[in-house]
Amino acid sequence: MSVQDILNKIDTLPPMPAVAVKLLEAAQDPDADMTEVAGWLERDPAMTANILRACNSPLYGLRREVTSVRQATNLLGLKKVVQVALTVLSSRYLTPSQEGYALAAGELWRSSVASAVAAEMVAQRTRYPNPSTAYTAGLLQDVGKIVLADFVADAVARIQQRVDEGTAWQEAERQVVGLPHPEVGATLLERWGFPPVLVESVRWHHEPERAELDPALARISHVADALTMTLGMGLGADGLGYGLREDAVRALGIGSSEELQEVLADLADRLARAADLLQAPKSNG
Ligand SMILES: [Fe+2]
Image (cartoon, rainbow, N blue to C red; front, side):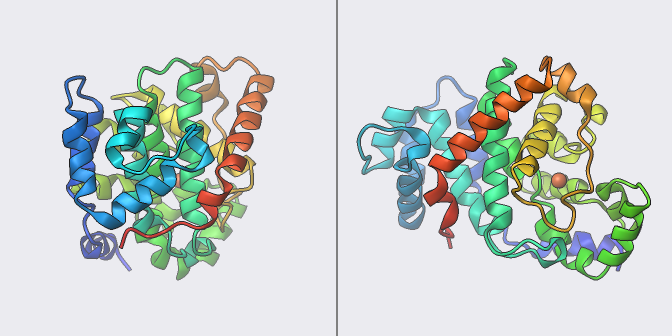
C-alpha cells in the first residue's frame, strides 16, 4: 500500500462528466443562457428524470410539479437547478457502500447531501456571498472516501488506535495509509477540472485554518460537516474522530452555541422534508 497505489485508484474512477464543470461555470456567469444550460441537461434522459424527481421533492417547496428542466430552471433559477444537477451527477459516486468507513450503501450519499444543505444554510446565515458554491463544497467534501475506503479497510485497526491516542482521524489516515481523505478528494476534484476554491475547501474541510484562497468556504464546509455528524448522519468508523474548530465557528460570525443549535434545528427540519429523496437515491448510471 503506497501513495502511488491511492493515486492509481483515482485514475481508475470514471471521470465526472464534463457537463459538471460547465454547470459550475454557468452558475457563476450572470449572462449564462438558462435555455442553453437546460438543453445540456435534457440531452440525458436518465439525468433529466432524476433532476425532475429532485426538483419535485418537498426540499425545494415548488407549488406545482415541474415536467421539464427548462420549466424547473424558470421556477427555481439557474443556480438551484445546477445544485440539483450536481447532486444527481455525484450520486453515482457517493451512493455505493464504503466499507472501510463502515458506511452502508446510501449513507455517504445522504450525509453528503445533508452537508451540502447545511453548508448552504450556514453560508446564507453568515452572509457568505455564494451559497450555491458552499452547497457544492459541502456535497463533495468527503468524495475522497470513495477512493480511500479500500485502503482504510485494510488499516482501520491501526487508524483507530492512533485516534484513540488522540490523533485526529484525517491525520491518522495520513500516517497509516499515506494520504488523508480530504487530500484524496481534492486531488480527485483537481483531475475533474473543478475550480480551485472548491478543491481547497475539500482539502481543508477538517483543518479550515489552513485554507488561503477562500478560508470562509473551508470554515463553512467544516461547520456543515460537524452539524451533519451531530444529526447522526455519516457516522461511520470515523464519526467520533474529528473535532469542531470553535475558532472557525467564531470567524464565521456565529456568536453562540444557541445560534448553532438554531441552524441545526433548521437543518433537521429541511432534511426531514427531503426524507423521500434521501432514502432512495437513484444512480445516474
Ligand atoms: Fe471528511
